[in-house]
Image 1: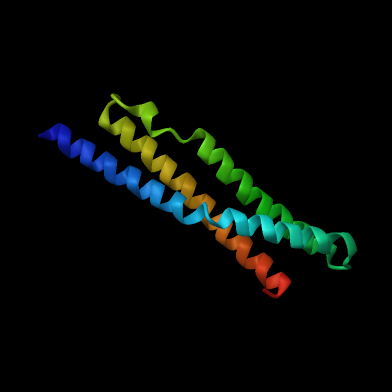
Image 2: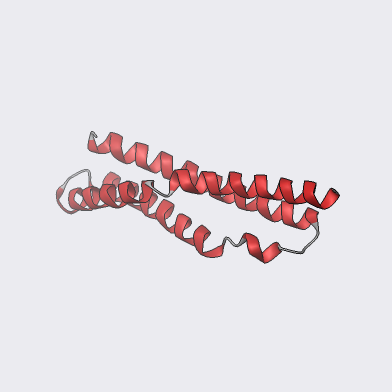
Length: 116
C-alpha cells in the first residue's frame, strides 16, 4: 500500500511538471516570430539596443526550454528512494517554472515594445 501512495505522489508531481511544460511549449512559435520582428528592427532602428536586449531575453527563454527538455528524464530516478525521486521532481518543477516565468516575461515585454 505504501508503494502505491509513493507512486501516486510521484505521478501527481510528474503530471504537474508536464502541465507546466505543456503550457509553455506552444509559446515557442510565438518566441520565434517575435525574435524575427525584433531582429528586423534591430538592423534599422535607433531603438535597436532595446530590440537586441528583448531578442536576447526571448532567445534565452527558448534556449532554457530546449535545455530543460533535453535534460528532463523522470525515468532516470525510477527505482530510487522516494525522497530522491521527489527531490528530483521538485527541482525539475522549479526549473520549468523558471522557464515559464522567463518565457511569459520576455514575450510580454517584446509585444509591448512591438506594439502587439
